[in-house]
Length: 340
Ligand SMILES: Nc1nc2c(ncn2[C@@H]2O[C@H](COP(=O)(O)OP(=O)(O)O)[C@@H](O)[C@H]2O)c(=O)[nH]1
Ligand SMILES: [Mg+2]
Image (tube, rainbow, N blue to C red; front, side):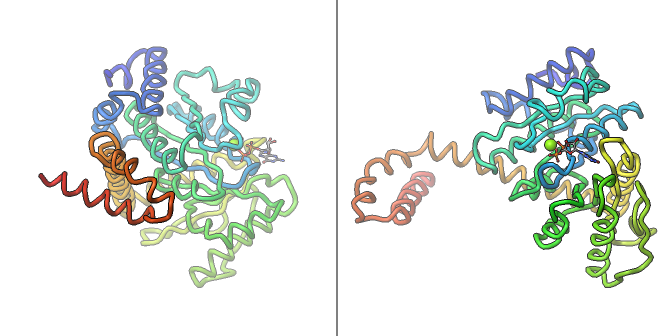
């Protein structure tokens, strides 16, 4: 793979090269690890933003508006949709030509839905790899949409520089999120559907909860449509205070405030050293993931593990041997073999 084409080739060739590279990585076709290895030296330029929150909160709508906003500033944007409930390609975004009209034919916008086949861990791993490819390809912004139920939002915070948590006034999402510990993952809170009743209350509720955590509740709470509540990071301070932004994604209200808050967060991360820490952790996770995959492949393909398993499976079935004992035995044999 020629990374120069991927980074600076003519737009059409570039889009095709990116799409090809992604499907090679996603399907783990031969050579995908070499491709990612070659991509590594170009990784690090993109600003990665995770958009998480419950289904129907407006994540896709918000994502689309953020794309529009950044494109308006001349930045290239890539979107990865990990939300299986509303894949961009299937409906919410790409399929809906009218909604996406402004940006979908733009070569500086790349949109990809990640398939949910395989385990969640596998999905998270390949999403991280696709992220790296898009980063190496030179996209200025990468947006990762994931649904905030279960483990996937944890995975997304691991791969993004900044995470926005989208909540809506209806259906008690706020309360649930407050309880679930999801709140702590957010760098920016977005209270979407501000055109609906209860948005201001939810924003206040989040702000108060944040204040309680910091031990400074009820201090200077103001709420204006599309404005941040409270402070967004102390001047020169060590701690980031996640701002609460009210938006109406369907009309675009509040979107520039979300974009500005995300930029402020990245500036803070850069200044505080948090960005280096997060990226460092990310590379540790990545290396472990690759190592796990390599070990698994090696175990299955290049050792006698499968053969030993087949030989003694009857004993496990009949109850004479437990899977734990057999696994331990296989491991002992393999380790022995590995040493010679
Ligand atoms: N009233 C209102 N509806 C919205 C707003 N944002 C999104 N929606 C609608 O909420 C529904 C779910 O939006 P979507 O972006 O697909 O949510 P996702 O599942 O979080 O990606 C769609 O019908 C949107 O048009 C908003 O700010 N106000
Ligand atoms: Mg969606």
